[in-house]
Image (cartoon, rainbow, N blue to C red; front, side):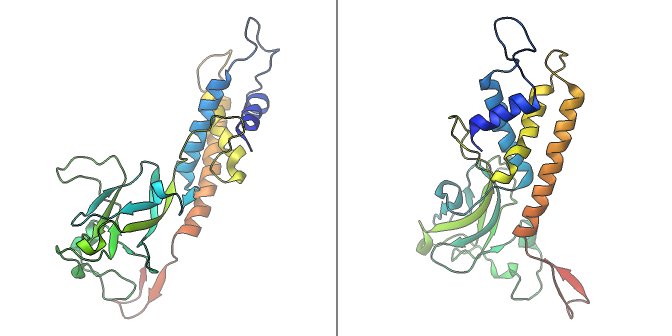
Length: 251
């Protein structure tokens, strides 16, 4: 559904912004520019809340060139989560780990990343983390960050890490024939947030708080449903087994 059609749906069928409702020089309560801004914001919000926008091909958000002896790499601010990562040219994915796992014992199992194998020496990165929230000086990291373990040796300098990511829309829609980047089945769903933004102001002539809240709740329902579907597709089911300190569930 293109931008023009979405704006018309929002204005006519959701906001009922008709020319016979107001008098004066303008016949609209909301300008096209305002509704355009609300629709773009709605798409970003839907993508962020639902994890429905996944990408494995756009180089600006899915590729990072390794640098000798460097652990930390800033990702695009459009990246919400890294689903998987691998060294370009190799078949197998790297192992996902986390800050706490680097200082904890992991049971010996081929499906596990053995933290004891990671040393301070540079080499071939075999694992990655995206949960580092602080820089070396202790400051908060705003940009999404990829950490590689161990740090790359000179052999891997300039070699790309290829990722599959969950992301935000890359650009705002502007032309009437532009279409949202999120899947088509969610185009109308996301308009609930645009309607909420338009109606949330406390003005009897323009806003409607109760209706705004209903749209906000409807939007939340849609994003929760979409996120549940995304989670089922993105993550590996539980494994189970015996002989590992009793019966255990593992991710």
